[in-house]
Image (cartoon, rainbow, N blue to C red; front, side, top):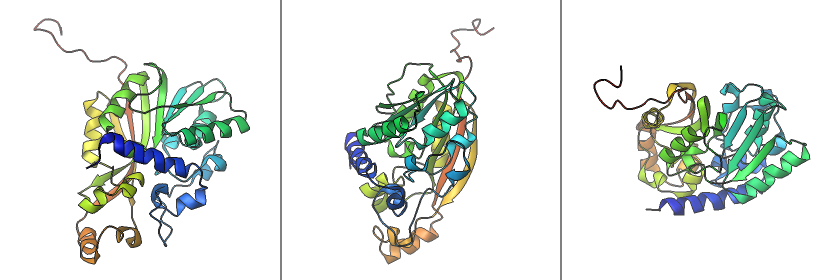
Length: 282
């Protein structure tokens, strides 16, 4: 069993390689992980072309949703993009927040930060910056962001509770997030769950959908809403790398679902305080 640090090192190494690839290469792999499919499996099936601010050069085909489409970003907002990659969602957020706003992208892979900065400089985006750091310990002061977005990233982080807690810390009171992520309904076979390539491919690091939503609620968020929910189908030629014919047939009959969800939630305007006695809550 890999430790959290070993998993993070593996993800960092894999996404350093992905940063040097083009979108077409990543689209022929499971979220860029390299477990190639002759059916050209692309876990990101949404079309960014409809969104203002989209820059194809910053799109590595690594997402599993369109969180910025649902994020309710307003002019002048401060937006943070978790796992910002080459800058795709950050640049769309910049279009929404305008010249008076600010976008901060956070990624723990140096090669991705370098690529995103080059993309921003080439376009003269002076109100977008990219910071290297772990998203469970963001290099951002508390109560900074109006909106947080993220696209297919939390499933890569072993300490998901730590990420949710830091999202709460960094959001302003009354701020909100819109996050696209991979979740499960049912249990993955052990061989898939333990495969490093499938972890980097956004699948084996996913948790149960109900557990995911409960984790958000337990950390104090309100008005939790699933804005989008779609099925992710992994082709047989990828699954057969981890399952024999009998196991593959059993998996298909198991009812296990791999889903992409976009979840919205708000940080309360006023934090709830614990009641200290019979009179203090009056």
